[in-house]
Length: 211
Image (cartoon, rainbow, N blue to C red; front, side, top):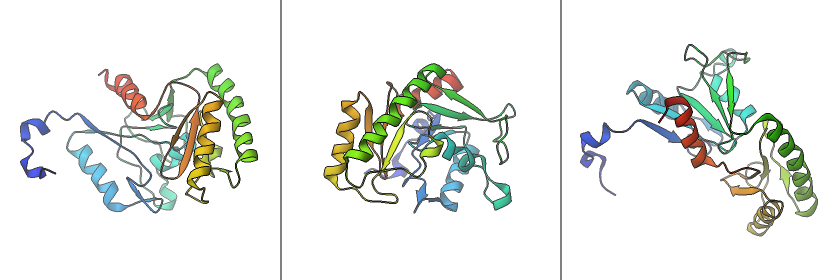
């Protein structure tokens, strides 16, 4: 690996922003650390855009990103958060600030799919989730599923453990139902649609910055 000191400054100046995963990238043992938050703040202070892209649900991402002053949790210094593997984005209010927690109407969501498509997909996904729990020994719906709108998640390493064989079985069931499936460090995510984290990253840059 080439040392960062050998990276020409002229090349560094071409950087527009930074994308980052959240679980096991920004977080340690499931929590954001002070040095990770400082790194995000330093990037913003340097004039770079910062957008986390996560498989976590939009409902989980709202208070995580918006902060909870009553509990001493500060908002993250980011432009937006793209959740549920690229399906939905949480955006700043009109003043460029995250709203205080509890969240109010100043927090906006931007979806890749229309409301009718999301509703139809949601109903189908609940049936697939029930099939997985029924057919795969030890399979459990992730504990953050209450905040999910556009995908389902099966826990394999956060609060339970699934063998590699059973993880493969969950993926196979999702794919047999016509879903996309991906395995993160903690969950197996499944959804209907062409989006993914990379597509979501490209989408939000077009939406926010016209690039």
